[in-house]
Length: 512
Image (cartoon, rainbow, N blue to C red; front, side, top):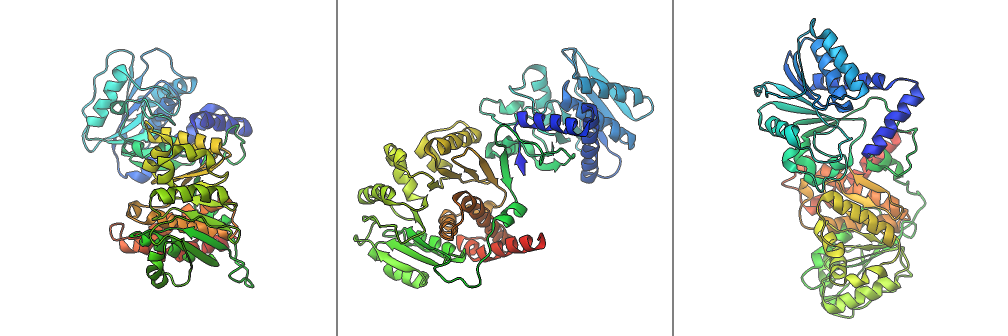
């Protein structure tokens, strides 16, 4: 699914209008019909609606919805805020249509030009929020900000059209939280908006439903890459088949540099996830102290011992391997940091940097330019801040990740509920799988193992990132479905990796 900016949303509307040879008011009517149908699915019976409409096209949508709801027999009271005496063309048309039919329907209409008295709203009432849409580019202030606060304090259910009023489509770094509608349901038109995927905006959105109105998003070419939300169909198409005549050499040989004294578990988890994801052969380079633990826990892997008994201290030649991952449980001792820097310079195959590899870089930020091109970094937000500095908001951090990926020509997997994959080409892919049951120790190690497996099998770096993150989240979803989010551990997630792959294969075969 494309995730469009405000500019791209306007381009898509304009493209659809031109391609279909229709007027913008016709497209607005189509949107209103789809929005009304979605409201009907949410609630049944005759209801009281209070519609708050702004002077732009979002207000026009709200007015059209009000007319359609009234035609179905609902009681609708409408407040159109026209304090500047200027409505958009389509908003004005829908005002006139509403007023013309008000006498024969259950519509009470108010056009607010000066003073406004807030109606009493009860918990049985439903507010339709159509004050501001995706065109908003500054915080709401003045009387409309006071209105937002009154709506938020009411007991009524709030349905926002396209976006909660006050929430900007992309960057809300300098927004005023108290001046943003807190919706119970957001009916967003055609596509998600970038701000919907940021953790710090979730309190405003409520339940998000995408309302398809038939815009021609698959036909248009945007001047800048849209964001993309990776979903099941596309991820299933990325999954490669396995040759029935293959052997362990066919499916790749990966090197995992992981573990230190007291941290063998991280190596075990990454190794188990790697083996569950289809790799042919895995070698773990680890201190000798971890020998017995790893031999018992993952007997199928090959062990390569470091010269130090307790910590990583010796770089490894990477010629025999198809891909390398370094970091889980590695520790940040000085000897390990020096060996890590040397390992980066000697690695000529696809490279994943995770966990303590990122912590070492965070403590030696002057080494950042030494990261090989096309390396994959997998930071969570705090690790990202240690690497690249503080950010005001999640969107600010995402923007920084995208800029760093382009500048350093690396892949950054910024982990979170909607994990973001930022590529050297400037594209950003959001992941749609995963749940809060994965907020537990070791799940990052499991992701590293999955990525190492896919890279070793010969997937492109971009596809390995997208598919690896998706499988990781899907395995977590399947585990939580069976065991609950509270009861899911990383070992459960790893056990469900084959079932996640199976689901992708089934979907791919059903769509052939």
